Image (cartoon, rainbow, N blue to C red; front, side):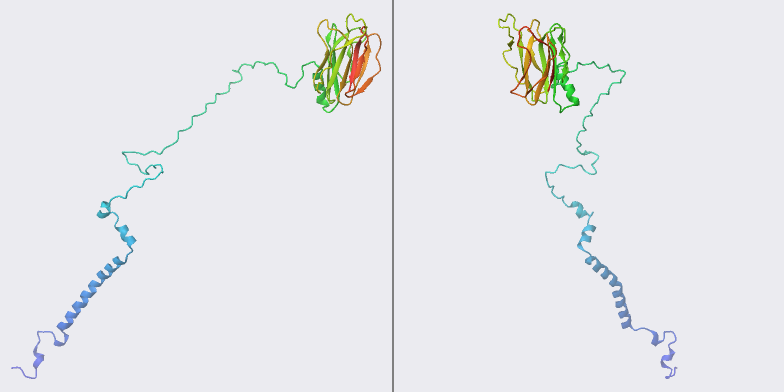
Length: 293
């Protein structure tokens, strides 16, 4: 029989009463543990709700709903269609390319050995050039070395001989001591405002013994141009004398008569004055003359 004083000290098969938790405490611990386990899930759900709408839209791409969404209606503009960056295998769209220009074919130049020698074409006289051998042609040659100088060139047609070479500025034309007659003169001047002239011609069967003048003076022929008096045709009458003038300055002459020597020099001023060479005697003539301006 146990002693009344032993009491609680006799339970040797059980834990001591002071170390065993009570039921209310266990329940409270279970509740706290459940709360702690659910907190991470609540936080994760709140983070998904706080993401911007933009991220949600991007994450939705490729879903079933996105694939079923009807395509946006096409918009027609005036712009020409552009080829696809990656055309499908069934249909390849090629960009329009303008046609390349045709090549210009340049024929190769022939080699010197194969080419034929060029045919020599006759030289053409310049539009302003004077006929070769005339007084104006001699004047052109002279003017090249003295373009500003005053000059006169001339030549005589001698009966039985033809045209003599043109001479200039005081050189003799005609013949001396041969009794030859002059039937025409060709004169050209430079830097004297042109020339005009008239011929005094032998008249066959003249009862007065005087030569006669040609019907009229020549028109004023400009500087550098040929002026003609008399005739170079066969049977043309010879000149017993002639008259001429220039536009400015003076014109001078010295003549050789058929039955005499050289006469003195005579000069006349510009138009309306004029100088006279030779004689009015129908049976006499001048054989040679020298002219200056």
